[in-house]
Image 1 (spheres, one colour):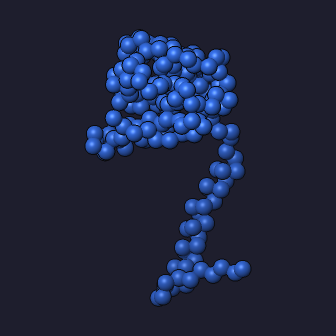
Image 2 (cartoon, one colour; image 1 turned 45 degrees about the vertical axis):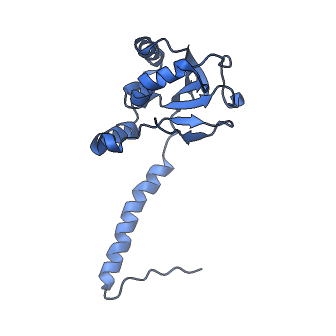
Image 3 (cartoon, helix red, strand yellow; image 1 turned 30 degrees about the vertical axis):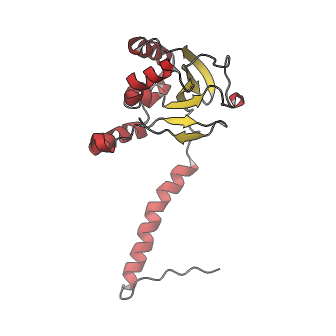
Length: 181
């Protein structure tokens, strides 16, 4: 198959060559960067195992849920929600299956690093989560650049445009957007 570039009518030949040269100039750095890219960074997240009707889960959702994603902790360890009863636990390397709700497990690529069982209140939650994150190596505590970009975009969008939706997992453990509110 032969592909032919056709310039709009009236474009001088010099313009076509310039367009092709610009396209090549912008494509080359992307190709080179992709060829030499290192391994992907490990994914750190905070898994929240909850259940319908859990009073303490609802309390966490009211007190912490709306702001978690805006905090440094939320940017370092984004929240992923799971139903404690319908999650496929074979996808994780856990020290033990969570039975109490809520249970918060700090994970790196699905492997448990540490956990908080229950919700001891806003002040204790932040202190305990802070201690868990402090145990991470310094390079894991860095806020990803995309998180700071998203925060800036959210600030520009104002409260009306900010969704703040965490993610949630269905029975087979896939991630979906959680409804707000």
